[in-house]
Length: 119
Image 1 (cartoon, rainbow, N blue to C red):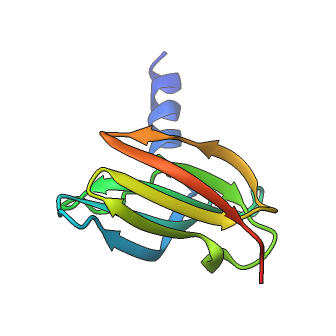
Image 2: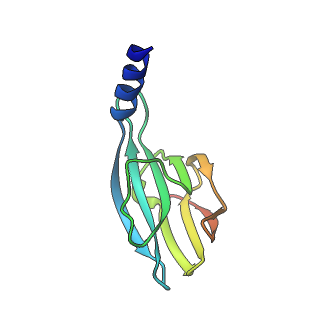
């Protein structure tokens, strides 16, 4: 039993994933920001481009995006976020993206999506 618990703790502590921030955009009213980042979980999984909405004073932890998770065929910089107000965020991404998660509301913020053609 103790050995199984030790193995579980070691597995949780050894997270192979990492995040690389591409852009951060503060909400116009302050208090929140949207972060676009690439998540890499090692050689056995593909990179993904993700978006999270966080309180303005929080940093991006080593966690998956809470708003958008997508695999892009091309340039990760084609994902963009724009605040329409302090409680409304617009996310654009290539129409060819394979989307795994797309949340329309998070922590009091409504999120709209705009698939775009790639250039």
